[in-house]
Image (cartoon, rainbow, N blue to C red; front, side, top):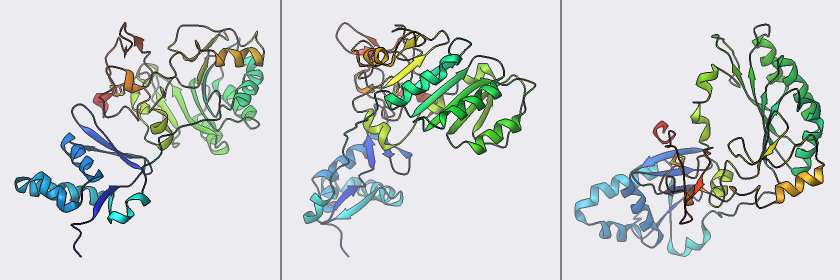
Length: 329
Ligand code: SF4
């Protein structure tokens, strides 16, 4: 059958994003990406208004082979399909609208002698705020016992997923951590910091030396619909985040300087007022499209970079350090 009068459409969950040097197709459903040259990105833009035969004509005889290769690539990777003109309206683009009922969606808490006694209060507050993702850094001894206790407390909370960061103590056994993970589906990952070379059979336990741990940047890229749509308008690291440090101090994130009160001293109402304030939400809308270094980076809608953006006099944002993550890709 001759397809020359048909239109090509990308599957709505497959979205090309233009970068400065190269582009990427985000496959939001299969959670994967395809690196493509910018020429192919521009080629895809022709699909909007032109049939296959028109595209061949527009690209010229000299480029016939390239056009064929591009079509072949997109078909082989299952990124496109063909439709007739009268079907065009049946395939709208994916909505970029992002909403969240939660006031706080993710929290980072440092568990210390000061904050541990207030953990029930903290979890109650986070549940009332709709928080689903938790990162807990254990700063006191007996990591295993503390993690076990915390996981027990989470059974009645709204927390959907929890990541722990803890020092591995010599008297502990890796098998106990493994068992804890088997019994608790909420545990997403346990980062165990140890100078010793340890082995585990669990893919959810990541053993690393404290020095190496800060370099584990590959965890900062995620491809999914929620992150992609959120990042169109919001900073996916700072948005709806709260950080409670060892002393109980309340911050937007570990990277932000302003302290907004102390969790050991305030009521839930006070906390809600803090979170609703413009000052607390200062970085929430600073998405990658307004940050000089990131606005032409093809990874900007999958990147959860945690550097603090600074505002220039002209109103754009910049970083004072260089991006180390782009090279990892
Ligand atoms: S932080 Fe780096 S990888 Fe992320 S969007 Fe910016 S330039 Fe790209």
